[in-house]
Image (cartoon, rainbow, N blue to C red; front, side, top):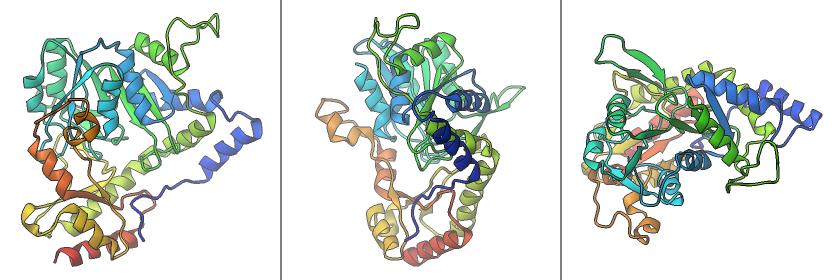
Length: 377
């Protein structure tokens, strides 16, 4: 079975982790944490990095740092992982949804302006499967209405967006460099992995201090076991940071390999009628975190049937996200009742992603493509 993801670690990771074990710095203190925070922030064009235990809590920490009041609204795509909406709900806010762009599968930015109300506090763009959201219109809306931007870049390590392309000085910017706060995941299937892990990035020193305090139980600097606020234990370990730092040192190689995997799939699959492949808009550099495909409705099967057929050829896959508006846990809370988002519903029903891990070989990639051709021929 060709797995949907397989990690690719090397000698440098082993060297750094061995140093942690040898010196005893294996918990949530040690030099690798600070070096990883500083290095990842610099790579993304940010001033501050706050390492945390996973990407889900990175989102929760970012939302908490904004100090939402009960009933405050955050606009986000329905087509995303539940962590995004969960972070808003856990902080007493109300997630407000928009549909997907049919080409990129990211949030439809044109729908956002119609969802802004007097209760709106923030917009949460999510870069889906390695393709950036069209950020300029969202940044303009946020500035016009005084809203925060919480950027979910969990699937977009190394992806780039051409900012200011309608002006005289367009600039390529890294995903993770936009808005008030940006969030990353370093789960095992991400371009950089610490096993579990995540990070919050910001340019605002006050938000950075707030996030660091919340991450570490809100201990007081001068009086450790005295607490004026309730915080969390969201700390990353030195062992995990060592893994991440080693991969950061070869980030250009990692991004190049992911782009090679994505472009190789596109070259071999673009002749199949009724198969929608990942887009790469002229203003984006896609890192193809996972290579997703969407079946046309008239192709004669849905994604579940397609996955089963591929499994018969020893190809592992994963389904696309199910929209937040279709999640029973939110419907039971009275959220999103009778809301419909047809693009997200269609790609959730007809979409899956193929083996895309960094350890995928060219031979395996060709085997996957052969299987896809056989199943859909």
